[in-house]
Length: 90
Image (tube, rainbow, N blue to C red; front, side):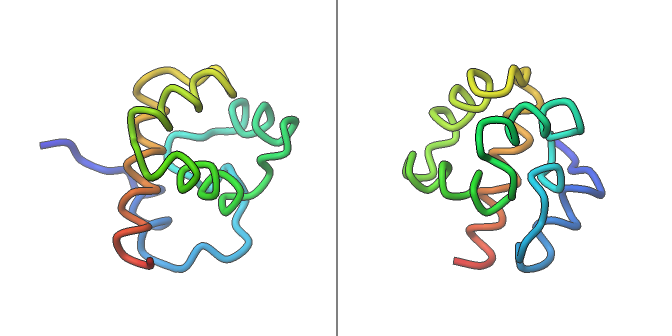
């Protein structure tokens, strides 16, 4: 069973609001800056991409790897974070 980070638990545990893209699990400063340069500056904008991909974690993971250079672990962590947030708040 995989464990989640404190960052993951903090994000999933409350409404998203206007949080930075770097608040997402798996997204640090370097990946966050790459996403910001492409217009994905807020967590809700990345959530929009996740929803456009019909909450398909595999498709989202591939998109995030292409868009930001994230590795599989980082992209998977972000996808899991968004999926759990959707389960809790949508």
